[in-house]
Length: 366
Ligand SMILES: NC(=O)c1ccc[n+]([C@@H]2O[C@H](COP(=O)([O-])OP(=O)(O)OC[C@H]3O[C@@H](n4cnc5c(N)ncnc54)[C@H](O)[C@@H]3O)[C@@H](O)[C@H]2O)c1
Image (cartoon, rainbow, N blue to C red):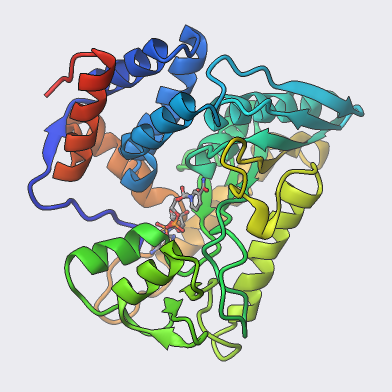
């Protein structure tokens, strides 16, 4: 994991054109210009950083959500309650990216005043990649945290039905000369998209990724996907895999923690209720900003960060490997490459975007 595979038959599309197409589609559906730009920016960040599953490939779902009424195009998120360091925000069922960006901005503003800012959000929608929001804190010299709950796909340790989402966690930490540390990860072993890829390629999955309806590990992707779709049971395993042997219970704990902070704390949906209501997903998010200067001078902290990351990179490599990565590193490299080369879109994604073009009258670019 960590490096996106380019699907056979992909075309390469320049990022500015794809961004303009995304903005125009959202505008056509009634999203205000500034909000359409924010949503497109988050989708482009995912595609540039090699997380195609959360990039423009998701646009069809947002279009369906807006047309169906579960996503309000002219969203009106509002602060329900606040202290100097915290806020509870109601997303008003707006586009997740727009609600989330405002939530993180608020956390950073609060941290400027009090050294820390924590914002919990309810009544939102799918926000894309968590790393976009945690990284917003970097420019302010702060550590950023971002998290969201998600549709139930993950089976708790010793369970046989999916109760929790793939609930991602992201933490971004500023550095000096080096690229920042950006941990951005689902709390499941794999996302559903990876199981779908194995299914399309008719490949067996490794043991420990997913369980069937008995609650035990299976290598058959089709069985897992069908059972999940029909809500018969089975699902993806939390980080660590099946049972306790490789610490699946710890991944389960992390996924649950995310649902507590993003669901229970703001009063958003939790567990099986996330996306249960077709009219309002009630997804919840949690954002945090910590001002490093409340602890130490920023430059001294950054110097120590650079030293720590360099120690890791310079440490002895396993046989057959010549590089130790730091979290975020592969994505920064990918972003540089894709800004120059464009973004690869698989045939299915292109087909879905052409369909949106036909439906909305926004001209497709490729
Ligand atoms: N909105 C949602 O509901 C939702 C749900 C789940 C995941 N997501 C998003 O999906 C994306 C992908 O998640 P994932 O768990 O598949 O990510 P991943 O497994 O590709 O990477 C996880 C982390 O590990 C780092 N990494 C990768 N290889 C590494 C290596 N060899 N050494 C050190 N670090 C390495 C990456 O930079 C990243 O920080 C994330 O952006 C996440 O926010 C969103």
